Image (cartoon, rainbow, N blue to C red):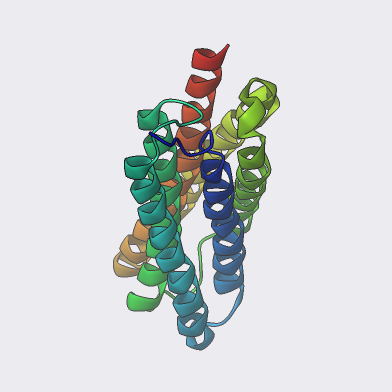
Length: 204
């Protein structure tokens, strides 16, 4: 039987998938900065990125089924692709809800949360090409964990600001659902990092 190379294509596919996260977080940041009438066009662009991410995830799964030798455990490659795709879904959902709900202003703390998400995306994209030497990626998952803690703190402050006396209940509910997607995305970045750390432990 003729074996394929040692699964090096997975490193590139995962790097491409992570690069989509950088684009998506930048688009989400742009969406939160423009007036409501301009948000739909930005959300449409983000949805295209999410669709491209789905295609990459599908390609990774097809490659897993056709590659005899993989660079690390198949279930870890599958988990890594799925966790990256999860983050992309959360970002896309946040944009979609903001448009569908005709959200007015984004709540205070949105800028801080988007800075965290953009930084986490950059770190993730930088880390994926380094999977061939996964043991050297410890600084990546340490910083991602710190960013997730920062996002948790920001999320709690955002909720506290939303639920101030006298706030419009409907607007609060709209904003809360969008903000929850921000928080899920931050958690998702940590889940990606957890898979990388698991791979590092297995490879050590």
